[in-house]
Image 1 (cartoon, one colour):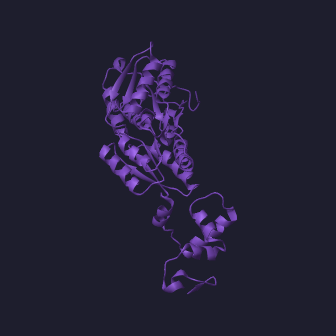
Image 2: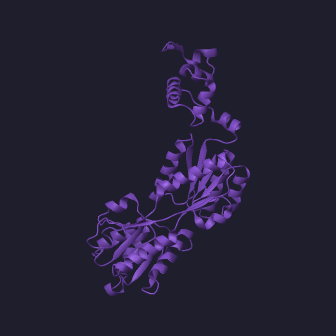
Image 3: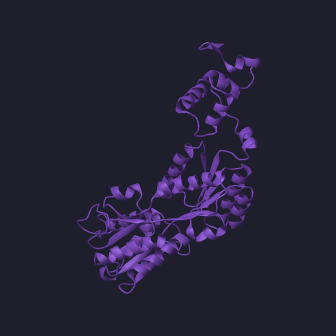
Length: 352
């Protein structure tokens, strides 16, 4: 069969599989140029990249990743292990990682550990078997041994958790204590004197940091009551909100710092159903500044994290460590308080 004056691949050699040289012939470039384009190298002129990708599309060429992995010693896969699969924060983090990976021909594959160590170990083992280009993990359990094995085979690792930076690889974290301080200080500044934190588990490192920062932000001014929940979901927030609503008005907290925005939205829903006015009766500050925060029925004050930048930075670290023998790096990103109506009447979107 002829197409655009050229023979289709299945007529070459009695139906043999397409090869890189077939793509090179269709594009009018060298085999080396095709290889460079398919491996994501940035040294190829844009015009050649376009010609190669057009030829790939026309021929229906599928690169042999297994062969490429044998030649290169690693695959295009960047493994991403997430503990909190229902948290929209990590949708944005992964999006940032995917966009950065595209620049170097990488593919991000996600494993959800569901806060179970055996699942964390399973995914890390699977990415090791695939000779992943690198691995990013939001850890729940102690996976230091598994990450050590990955690094011993030359696979860079990035942990999204400053408290685990002693594990030997690179890490990226948000300054959770600063986020907690910002939240508590803001609640005190708007006149709240009975503060509460709703989140958990309280021994989860990221939660510990936020609580510690909140207590520091309110130190010497007001105490903070802690409501521990097993998972930071809308349902758990709603449950705690319903319990708080049963208290007499003078015994309720009048300012609440929620462990994340999902919990804050659950609290807001419960208070609305109970006839408790937000922020007139109770101010609420969330954490993460997910998309729903700004569009909630009472727009939510929140601690914003640079989510997509976190994912992009993790991939950049992996690619840089593969190109050069660099020591582990530990980046800490700063949060930002975004003030909306849920904490301060009359203030809808001003940043502190």
